[in-house]
Image 1 (cartoon, rainbow, N blue to C red):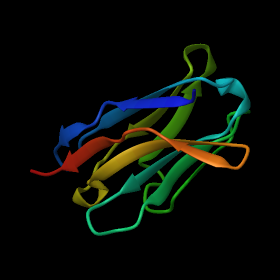
Image 2: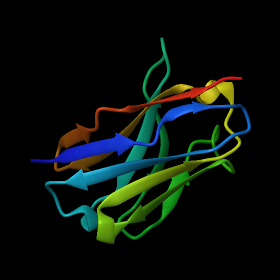
Image 3: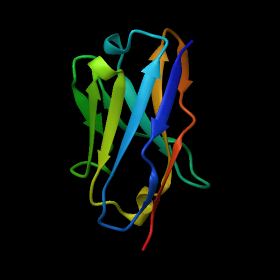
Image 4: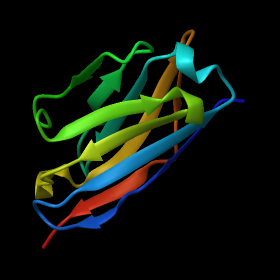
Length: 115
């Protein structure tokens, strides 16, 4: 079955960096676009960044120039490098893949940005 396992979250100071990882299993990883979403308390889940099977990327305006999504198909892993973190980046970050008509999610990893 499809599994997505995120890691790498934690506490960071404003201006700091974190790298999130999402290890995928149960499907042919290299064939599918992957996405990172986040959900802050009291807010809706929002798309942060996506990467196609060919490596093309896109990101939300709020993180452009600070966050970078990448993938390693040999390791079935998608990454989110987050630099120059801001308090408003505090959220639970989720890895996502859509296969046929179904969305799959990981359990999420908490990112807290605070001094």
